[in-house]
Each structure stands twice: as structure tokens, then as C-alpha cells.
Length: 238
Image (cartoon, rainbow, N blue to C red):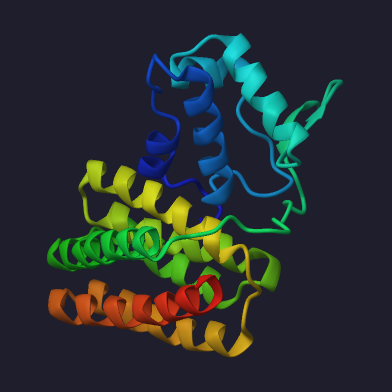
């Protein structure tokens, strides 16, 4: 269940791109797909034909975007019967992360607080069916049991699963865009084991509050959780 794709997240990352900047937007959307873990390292992307249809661009545009990301080390192209385009495993890590201004950091983190607190509140206020409840708990358990190499991907999926549980599709697209930017920064510094333990305890409180139908408790738990990652981001990026 936990490896199943998040339906609304897939819609968000595979939606049509703007006509005026088709190549750039296609490349950016593929990077977002990788950063959000929609396609895990070692797994294959949809076919060029399917990507062209989903992005509403030509196959030449898709092919060029894939070529750019393959040259950058994010994707691997394989020929033959079992060929296709695969996400690199391991993914490249930037040696010299780009400079992040304080204004940019606070803008992204501020929007994250609004989006994720709103998602947690909306999810807790809904009557989730048994399938949705099981899905959310399974996402939490997957993060709690994750290996170091899978942790950030599964953590991302849990946060986006909460956005999906809110039942507001346009919110998922905004949360996915925001999380992709946050992941760009998170991936520039190492996982801290005590922080993982603390995060997992916070995840449990967040999900438990949502499943118990306690919106205020869910908001308080997720804001406390986000404050911890914000402190790390400011520490490593400032």
C-alpha cells in the first residue's frame, strides 16, 4: 500500500505545462517528480509518449528534457527490451548548493506552514473512510520503519498524503510545488539520527490527531514538527 502512488500528487506533477516555456517547464516538472519521490531511485518514468500526452508537449520536448537531466545525472536511459528512462540510484548530491537568501527561505517556509497546517486542519475535520484512514496510518508506519536511504522520500509521501486527505485537489498541487523546493534544500545536508527519532514521534502525534478528528491538535502538532525542520534549514543554509 505504501508504495502505491498518491493519485492527486501524480496529477499535480504530470499536469500540462505552459506553452511558452515548454522545455523548461517539462524539465522542472521531471525534477519535481524526482525530488518528491513520485518515482523512486531505480524506478522507471512513464514512457516518452505518455509524458508528452500528460504534459501536452511534443515527444521531442520530452526527449530533450530527459537528455538534459540524464547529462546532469538525475536520469539514466537504457535501451533494449527492458529499457526506458530510470531515476538515478543514487541521486546526485550538489557539491556546492546554490546560495539561498533569507527572504527566499522565509517565503518558502512561511508558505509551507500555511499549506501544511491548513491541510492537517482540513483532513482532521473530514470524515475519512476506512481506506483513507488505513492509507494515512500506513504512510506513517513506512516512515517510522524507513532506512536512511528511503527516509526523505517516504517522509515526503506522508506529508503529501496529509494534503491529499484534506480533500482539496488544488491544495495538493501547491503543497507538491512547495515541498519540492524544500527538498532541494534538505538534500544538501545529511540526515541526523536523533532528529529522525524526534520527527517520527511528531509524525505519530500528527496522524493520530487527524484520525481522531481533532483539527486544533493536528495543527499544533504539525506546526511543532515544521518548526524543527525550519531550525535545521536555517542552520545549514544561513
